[in-house]
Image (cartoon, rainbow, N blue to C red; front, side, top):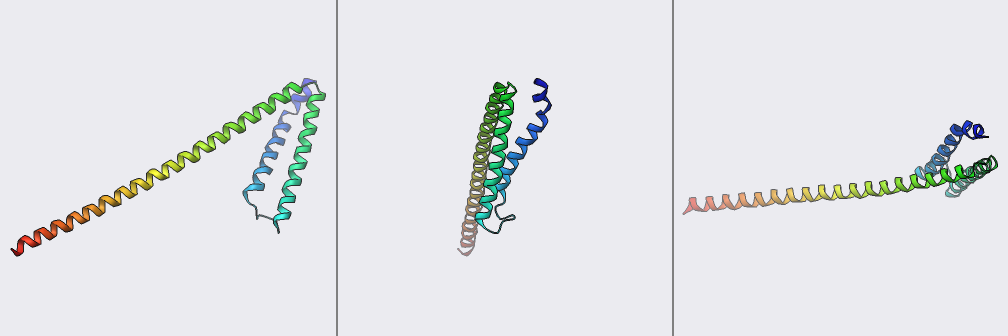
Length: 134
């Protein structure tokens, strides 16, 4: 029995990779090959429905082989990985936003210093010009 599950491990991994890929592609390029929003929605929903049905069959295969605990562990680990990935994406987005803010502030500060230096130079030039007349 154990060899049956171990023998399909590679196929199971490919299945989940394909499922994730379909879900991501559906969101990635919404105007890729569809003539309407409805056809895109139908295609996406039908593909995900088929993948969910296949996942359900896979789940029952694990259960029928006496590996329901293994299936539960796979789902728990998948959920943990998704949560870590989402957390990292949020942290990366926040870091990028903060970095952009820092760059904007540095540019603003540089421009303020440049303007202040230009004003100082104009004032100094005016004072020197005025002393020359007196």
